[in-house]
Amino acid sequence: MGKRSRFFDGKVDEINLSPDLKKKRKQFMSQLVEPIDLKTAESITALIDGWQKTSIQSRSIALAAKTYENMLADKARPTIFLGLSGALIAGGLREVIRDLIDFGLVDVIVSTGAILYQDYYTSKGYRHYRGSSTAPDDELLHDVYIDRIYDSYVDEVGFVRVDDMIAELAEALEPRKYSTREFMMILGKSISDPKSILYTAAKKGVPIFCPAVADSSIGIGLTGLYRWCKKQGKACLTLDTIRDNYEIAQIVLKSKKTAAIYVGGGVPKNYINDACVMLDYTKGHSYAFQITTDSPHWGGLTGSTLDEAKSWGKVSKKATRATAYVEATIGLSLISAYVLQKKRWQGRKQLKFKWQHDELKSLQLI
Image 1: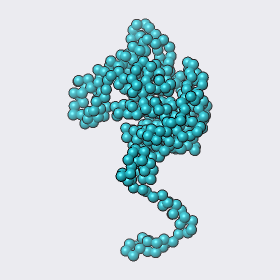
Image 2: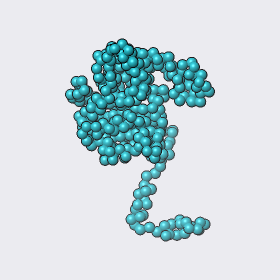
Image 3: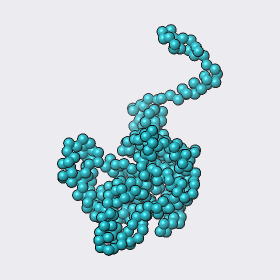
Image 4: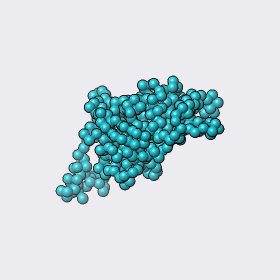
């Protein structure tokens, strides 16, 4: 057992262990927690590098940032998928996401419709406003046509106008089936806001998929068009999300490696994972990190671990992976700033997608 403590019965202040257990004990205590020295952490990169030797979620953010860095440094040039969910535009992340696209730090985006709609809404001159999460009178907000997103306000009148803009744009298109990837490219090309996610993705040729588009104001705008067309006896476009499946699966199959970044969860997270198994089995994502506030023990997808995804073949058995349990406006801002300030975009060739209808004819580096 070892030498007993002088003052505490049943406790020891020296222990007698076998050589093997002594070795294991020493290994467990081989890496010190190093306090953060804010006098020397003069940048976000220095702070996050310091967090690698801390604990709790600061270390988790550092591990996620290093995972991102490893994705970008891999000589096999993995195709990086970015999944977006949550109130990211209302939270102020519009230009953060735009910069990831512009600097070539992501290659494919899967997003909720709300994020893309609010990007488009902003590109049309409408804004989000700082409000209160404890609004004293949500009924009054309703009466004056203001919608609340936690502690941000948006203009319902603006939403209606933008719904009409989307319907009008779609009305002018050939009445056939479109993938959401194709439609988001059309939306992006229709605007001229260099700070826009949709505009920058269209300019860079970065595909954006929105598999749950019906559950958004984009879907509402298109529903208004659908009803109008029925009344007029006219045909109108339809969005074919099964075509989305076919298109995104081709990207996976034509990539040497793939990597995944999940902001939040829901449909975008699952869709990026499903892309690995939609058509033919692949090795799964070689790198993955997620930023989430949900917990795995509820059994839901948003909080599910990346190890769980291994059982489905969606994440590689040997994948480099990390999870940061932190709210997205904090986590994504810090991790994105880390790779941008380290200039990890330098020397990274861009992907060129050559589409012919629903066929990905080639995926080339330029």
